[in-house]
Length: 201
Image (cartoon, rainbow, N blue to C red; front, side):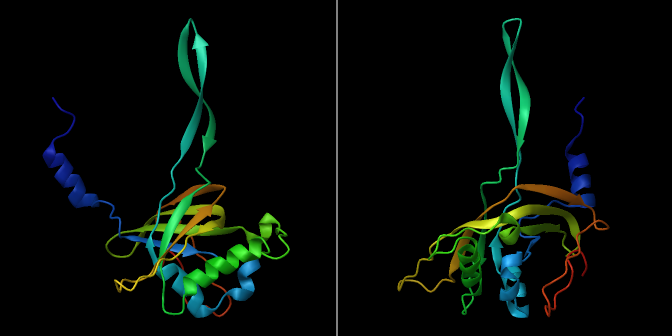
């Protein structure tokens, strides 16, 4: 006998529903180096303009271990994939998102002197929230020690009138998962920013 059947699946989907790719929220916390850059409208715009995001993955590195002339794979390291996580932002008329991430990158490495700031000055965090159909947080991921590694060029053309989009690739150290509505992360916006805390409607 099979472990489950189609009726079990339908019942489970009706009870829990399935996660939807368009039901998410991404909140970008400001690093210390950008605190003077933040405004109410900019803080809200950066997070609202996220079109595509990425829940980070994880990888276990292995090493062969030979026993009785047979190779066994043993885990020896964990990798959070911290060299690349990409988000795509819609660009508003004032180019808010592009200006912000370019200024962040310029604040990390001075384009004239080539001096590099200390990591604790430019590291930040990203809060990724999975939402249900009622805009309730069902799961959250906190990506730690984030900074923009690549701000992609933006292509313009006279042959179309599409909205401009900005892909930004971030480097990070690791991520942790926060489960459940009761444990959802509450954030403090920059001074003067008027926005609801993550996890509250």
